[in-house]
Image (cartoon, rainbow, N blue to C red; front, top):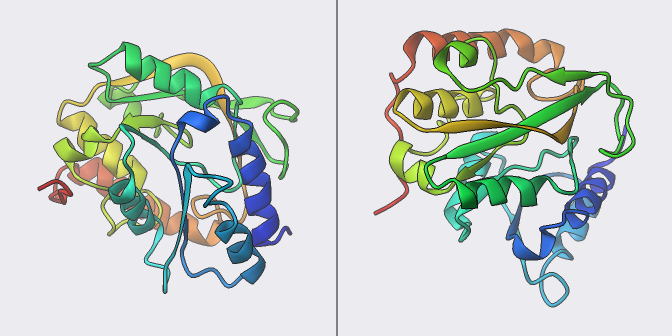
Length: 237
């Protein structure tokens, strides 16, 4: 098993390989990790060498979606995406998705196809993936079957002005809840025919760990059945 610093270094290599690297704002939040090497590595990813990187440390871990919300609030960029620690993006992924949003002002969220692998630490350009996650057009019918934006969407920051932030009540499926809430309220989604992500089906991952599956199912059922029961929290004054 890789240490947190090794995982972060691998992710950083994938980030640096992005064709849009110099045009992006990179926000890294350490949610009270216990890996001092990872903290040291993260602290070195900003300043004079990396002016477009900002590194923040929290005194405690508030949960995944609270961390995402804090990053969104700190962001000055018009577009948002998440970079998962054990997944990998195609070198062209961010540039391609941002270009689509630039050219299609009515679209709120865009996503490509995700390859799936069961082997850790593979690269996007060299991997053993033989399957794809079903990243279907985001109709309500399709989204009730699967979270099609999956691991690597890009969305407008203004989406949160309209529909609120991620609901921090959810521990595993808060992104699915966010997309369903936005979709039901009229947000426009677009699936593009381009492979943009390598998703590692990590047996110890938050959403795939065996012990977490009952909670994930419970959250999914709640999202499907209640939809808009929870009021979104706005971050804009």
